[in-house]
Length: 296
View 1 (cartoon, rainbow, N blue to C red):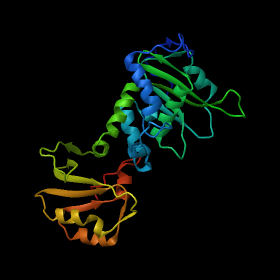
View 2: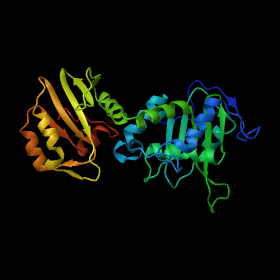
View 3: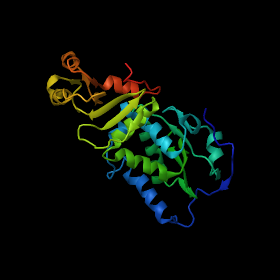
View 4: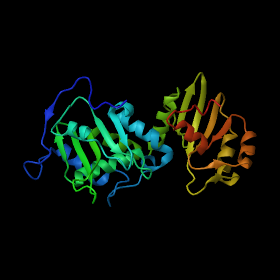
């Protein structure tokens, strides 16, 4: 359950009005603010780069959980979601105005069906900075997002962000890296009890090496954008490679974009120690209650 503060509350006073103007920032915090304003993925900025791990619904829950974990936060305790048509209560708004506790991070933000959780968070942060409704307190940013409305001249209270922004940017950088998807899926498999091992001789054929209950797996991750279903021609090269069985190791082709057709399943069944995990299974692994999809 969400709590507005921790059990070790300490109050630091701050003023939301910047003085002097422009606001004085350390070199590190200046870089952080610029990144949050212009460069984080999938925000409304020309400089922003798209990242499927941040925007795609299939990765939504686990990407957000991963980011929270990297920040030292817990979603159920530290994040409060409100509906897209709701506003933050006066009590919550006033609680964070004027002083903050530097011993915990908290987020209250509106959730939209068109946004992933991370997109909702990053957009709220970007808007609070762009509108100047933020302050820096030690290594925290405290930001408020008011949405302009003809119905309410003071604006609709849509977000309160009190976080240490540096760990957020580090987590986003990891997701944006060439092995971002591997990092996230490794995190997901660990959540369901797998030991994710370092590949001694990293091969182009394998992205992950797992072990659970004495059984070993090697996984190759593949995306087929624009293809709702996998047909034999899509996976022919992988089926041929899979024929070269590895003693005591099950080979997995994990496809996060498409469903497998019956014709592919028929070919798959002829190869010992090999199987294809398609988008339906990946959704189970990455859901709110993760499922061990390799135990089936």
